[in-house]
Length: 439
Ligand code: PLP
Image (cartoon, rainbow, N blue to C red; front, side, top):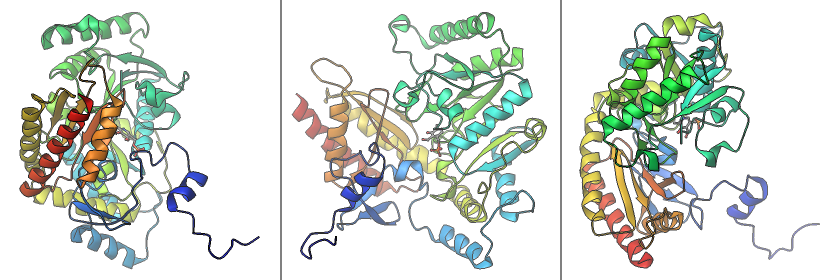
């Protein structure tokens, strides 16, 4: 039966809710349809403009509609070749792999491309399990590594785990979770000692040192941009090296100079890992992921994860153009500088806003943690209110944290001085409004 002529067309939101999972498009009470992007700004279907401090989820690393990236993709499209195959040579893959291998600082590094961060972690875990002939791995409490079985298995954030089963035998270590009562009042040094003792105990008892790898995010992304204290990963690495256990740094959120200090997040900790996984911003929104690992590890497992679309020529063209742009414009230095301004500004404002529990971050990866001013307890409601308040004022941000009470921000590395000041002002105004409503 056809609809009467005067029935309004169902909104995109209604159509979305009817055929897409119920947990999608929940960031805002009125979800946004983004229809255009230019520079570091996007426009929604109603014509509202926003400064974008989250870019999808850290995907448009150098902003929107970047001519260098568009032209590289158009040149590749014009060749007619858009498929990938491990059967043939692909110039774009080799060029991008050369750059990543060099930047990784991993000796004799080789690169395998996937289409996502999840697949990258899956491949890294597979490589490690194969190299060490064991299915036991170490992971971090509150971590997030993706949505495949193995990636969920090493995810320590209960909100995202939803499973009591993992194909791997996983032991979770302490890192960014130092707020636990048993660690209260400990100096960084004493906390690191306690963590190392715990690792040694795990290896001596549960795991018996028959462990393939430790997988860890240098700064936990979905966990709310939480950080282990400086020196923890270096201390863990010493113990791992004693046993030949591999270290996988998940750089899906922290790579490409975003943290300002070090091109990969783990450089903040002075550690050279055995493998790193990456995805998100590398191709500025085009689909890409991968693993960079010591060559002997990569070569050992034949066809670690043949991937029909991994390393496809379009993503490689975009990846090469994006990475060149980051390096040519020294965006790592820009991330350090803009991050310092914004984090400093937020910290200064936080002192008079009891709704703010913490301001943290490095470079252009920073977060505000919110709490109930009366009780100090985590407040997801305040985080939601902050997102809405920022949206009303023209700023897009992201949400996360173990209790949903953290507003996360990762602006494009191309953020200008004016945009940093604009974003900071909006954030402070929005925080003031949320603070007032909550007190
Ligand atoms: N690892 C980390 C640290 C992530 O933040 C994510 C995604 O948010 C992933 C892995 C999974 O990446 P993808 O969503 O591309 O599969």
